[in-house]
Length: 351
Ligand code: HEM
Image 1 (cartoon, rainbow, N blue to C red):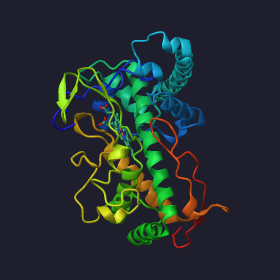
Image 2 (image 1 turned 45 degrees about the vertical axis):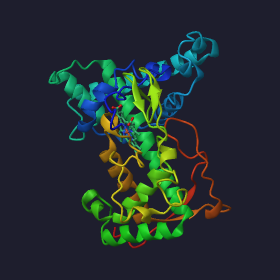
Image 3 (image 1 turned 90 degrees about the horizontal axis):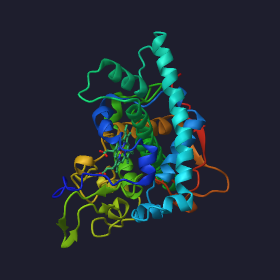
């Protein structure tokens, strides 16, 4: 991702990704557009759409036998995998058509107001013809699905793991909470204005991303030419998977690697911005996550609000020490067991 960045800047074609993301019409466009977009309005986040994002995430995990042996072309058909993908693709297509039609109708009626969401931005771009590439309906659908898969699951997963780690360690929870309540004292809500003052929360989020990177294997890459890495010859067109989960727990780089200890980042220059290769939850190089700044702001803002407004307790029968931290399977690796917590409203917030 540094010396051979250009060689490993491609992504392999996985069957699920191909069928669910409109055969590669997404990433190129997403890169250009993500900076100009925001995620969809809450109105669109109905259960059906979220369930669909979850299922697509699961099949796109990319470790189907047929992806590992792409030359065995009959495998997806024999195993029923292709039929499952087709079914999901049809469901996804009809849901996306509904969302886009709804946006078009609102625009035709002159509605929409000031709050533009991702689909509005894409439709505006298409209508304006101001891009140096043609933006098709398939591109718009692909970008919408991808931002949800790449952005929503990952950010939600990061928030979930961070809350779980804080629930396991009351010291960290209290320290982070005291910081938020001191910085925002007297305010009715936690907004973006003073987020930069929440220094300890930054450390907590970093430590959570080290131990629980939401994309533990990043997204797969593919070599474009033959190269040598650490004495190993990597032929062209090799699928390359980087295990950033293992790197983040490697005792060669981290003291007591499995311990959740945010202070380890306090006097350290190590950051997730793609320059410190022992810590790459957002990847590195030219294909690293374009949503990193947006994601870290969303994660921080959400956690700060949760800590400011509520004290948190585990449900009866659960104790912090034995909180189940088993990981689930998917593109974004969340917790296997849902984190069930009891919020207790904090009285000292002005109304
Ligand atoms: C905590 C949240 C997030 C994490 C941990 C995360 C992590 C990652 C990682 C590891 C990659 C692959 C990088 C590589 O191969 O080197 C990636 C790619 C990507 N992410 Fe994120 N991401 C997050 C949130 C977001 C958000 C909010 C968006 C969009 C709004 C986003 C959009 C993308 C896109 C479009 C790609 C593909 C980039 C490409 O292939 O060129 N991500 N992300």
